[in-house]
Length: 433
Image (cartoon, rainbow, N blue to C red):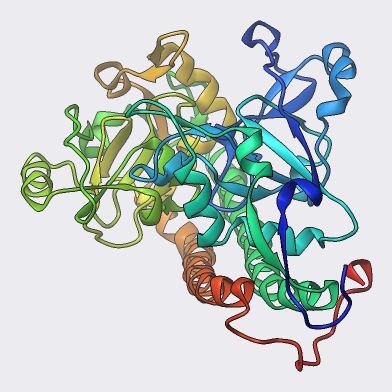
């Protein structure tokens, strides 16, 4: 391979080894053990590790060849067509530290580069529109699902620069991802601080002045006097879900979110499929639109996997897999959201869920679900300390959106060589040199 500025045309098969994931049986799933990574766990550019499926250690030990390492590159081989980008076939992600030593499930393939292509550069190459257009063009399947083959991945033909240029390009793009990752770590810390404060005050009942408040009986056990244990419908003006009919997708229109588009802090508008303006307006009239201060929860599948307060009004319609809670003046939206995130609340929620293959919250029953509600004055005191942390998280999320947009604007120009980096003096990390 050259060491100067020359670019050479190569096939991917000469640069990488490929390995398919394994079809782990659902009968093996357990509460503890080794995590496995499914394509449904793939996020925009990483892996969501909050609720990975587990298999027993004794089974995992027999399948260690599928073990992932931090920084591994994985491509989704079975998924949706680009018209539904939430889980699109050909998506390339990089394994984060939190998924280190997890096992790769089926419908994905790991790529291991040899010494002629730098790992980080390969990741960005496979994230480029050039590869995306190529690999989707090879996909086959029905309207609802597409698949790509290992042969198609290996046959990808492209121009590869020298290792020095690869490392420079990767360093430029990695700088954006490092900032994004740092912001995500800050968000996680702030989120944990706000939830810990909630738990201290409203679960352990160690709120300011708690020493002077006596405990009284309630349907959920002893609670401070003046607090209430009431059904959800008593503290929400509306409890509903999104549309039960799914309008057809269009190339350009209004986003329609399902549970697949949710994350811990909101909805990823960029992964939502699009619907027409007429269909969107019908859904708005049926109150299937997210509003500021609504609490949205994942209703179907991994119920309560995501639960968050809507930061601002957005022109986004919702499918029925998402439930909408509209808090009344008796409970602050963030108090309600944090209540529903508590582990003991999720455990109690099992009695309000139906379906084995696809667990689903039954809203008729959910309205009767009892929660503990502190006095609004105490909620307001908590909010003075906790909500500034939450608002700062939202600002960090906005920064990450801008960073991703800038990175994605630069990526195709750098990968194609349109932007020449050969004369740039860029500090290359030692591990990449």
